Image (cartoon, rainbow, N blue to C red; front, side, top):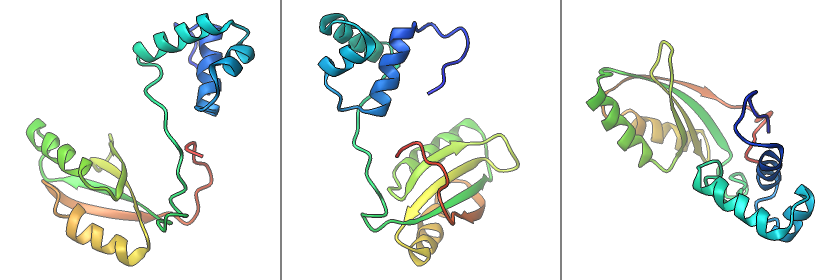
Length: 155
């Protein structure tokens, strides 16, 4: 994990974040040992980093392929209306689709880039036709199918 120059975090905070990002299940005792702090100050720093929003949470990283969802497609979405109310409506609706893993508003010739995960191309086609295309203000979509994930920081 890289920190920008001038980061308000000191080297111990950065090390705590690095260690927790690598292993969110690490014990406080082991984390304290790795960052060269006693347990109580280490716990206090973790609480402060959580409270200040540097640490958003802890989660298990699940292998979607093992769950039968190996197919990944990236969908460019162009909206017919980009006023605030239209963007808000689209944002609310896209958050409700479980097949959409990520949705990013993009500064480009299209408005959003969606990462969609399904079991296969047929399931993707159904999601595209019945769900994504039916989202509020969708005017046009273009799909890019992933052949292989070369780097995925969730692993």
